[in-house]
Length: 328
Image (tube, helix red, strand yellow):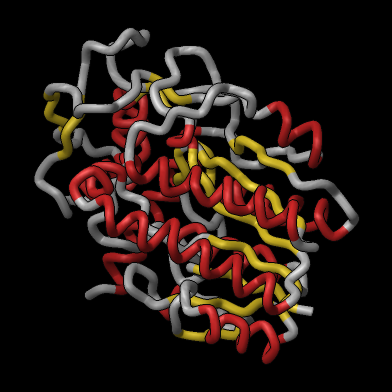
């Protein structure tokens, strides 16, 4: 019995690998290394370089490693890019997911966990969302993820495959033991960008929009530590293995921080008065995206261990310093 992690050389996927191998699980990583790094894969996992959308190849891996579960992280994630290049997102996200699900069915995989996004909700207003909030994605990225959610529901109704979906909010931070983190040099995550600016890797950063209907005028997001996020995945795996039903869950702390609050926290952690230029809003940016997170706590007994913005920023900042040393 083994778990296949697609995108396991990437940011969240590499943390999922750490969680599972630390628990003694047999883990197989499938990654094409387009945005991931082979050095980010824990040595206790098996690594197979390849495409998650190659049905025959994935079926072969399922048989080779006796894979019984798939946790699917692989895909493209930059919302503005999806607007400019929608076909990339429908290819890398929707089409690849369709083929991976087909391989799971052909290979007799029992359980499938999918990495989705808060972007499926679209413009949500200021109130925290719940799982029953109407779905209205406004970007190709959000729609590409929602299409996969719909495919999973349809396939699970037709075949003996159970699944769970986790809709992420703003994932940040790094492994508390310093084993992995957000390693893509030009990732667009706010906390990473702010940390890079504090370390002198960027001349400045930009704050997009200061006139939102939020307490300080800047956008508010629900930031979640990556280690808490993958812990929720592990609990979902246990839920499915014990006969739990198909489920879709938001994964969030239930509170938001503004862009200005994040920037100020990075300044405090780093001791650097980093430059943050204020500019107009970007098209399509919601004022606030937060979630209650009640269902994931109640169903899985999920108890976050790193629910603190300063801790999230400190771990991300420490990882950025490690990357500077690694990349010399």
